[in-house]
Length: 88
Image (cartoon, rainbow, N blue to C red):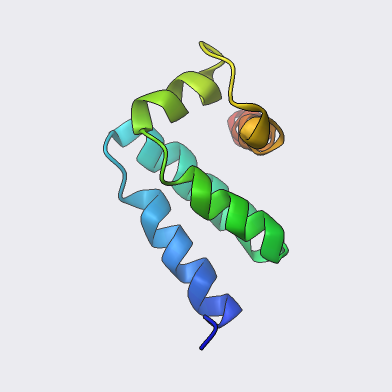
């Protein structure tokens, strides 16, 4: 049985706010709240896969200290963009 879209979004929002490091909790929970409800199935699948990555790697990618893998490059760029919007 397929997961209902609203349940999937809620699950991903919870995973976004329960990370290994506080910085990623804050960054990803804000991103999830702002962007996940508008994402299509492919976007949600990619985001779900990204959440399996190590928090320290995610932080390096989001902060621009390391290049994100090609499969996540656009998503990481969107996270950075949302973070910049939230700061202004």
